[in-house]
Length: 109
Length: 109
DNA sequence: TTTTATTATCGCAATAATACGATAGACATT
DNA sequence: AATGTCTATCGTATTATTGCGATAATAAAA
Image 1 (cartoon, rainbow over the protein chains, first blue to last red):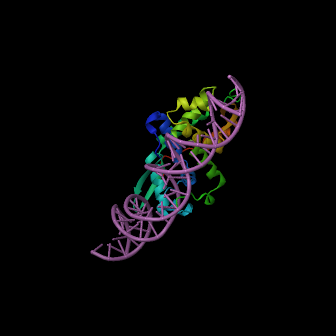
Image 2: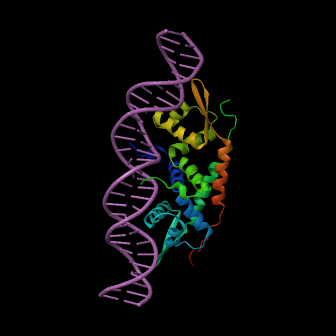
Image 3: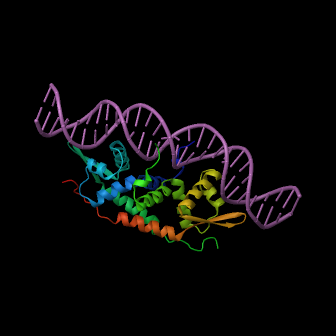
């Protein structure tokens, strides 16, 4: 065991979980916040902002790229990372849908 | 290593990441969806709905309870789990804040 | 071609997360 | 007191994640 049983859940449930997992680390939150705030999105800038080693930052960027939230654009010798607006809108819609539900306060009564 | 360096990030960044981590598993998404949809929130019902062992479901419930999204109410011999509206609104606000930001499409140009 | 600058990947170590059987705990009912 | 029902916890095996030094890869510039 030790592996998530993705096959028993719906595609949407897995997608929501994957998107949430991409946001489930403070460094990746910091990266996204920086890219939303600053126009500059060069990897080296992020390495300066984040108190993590270059290899670690690169790894977090890779995860965000894999899920689709970011895409990288080679601009030698630098790489410019940008938020992928399509996936960003997808995530916005998915989380919006979840949180727009009203909670039954008097549950089980 | 292998442990997240939480101390170098802000409380808010860590909180966002923790809330996202709570949502970062399809079983926990399914649990939340079920609690939002159905009035029944008894642990046993969730065990029937989810194709996971009782121990595993209980463990996921515990994680959601630890982060504050759920609270359990003992109703012997059952336990009724409900969404904690305070934390739910907090999460809604936090994720809403992130996603309301406009993305600069023409990044690095 | 060599150097320089920047980023990605590899390899490793350590911790975290997932899953479940077995068992313990809580509490009403018999 | 004994039983039955439901849930939590423990122990364990397996896989995933985090972090970083070292090194490779890429491409412009000297």
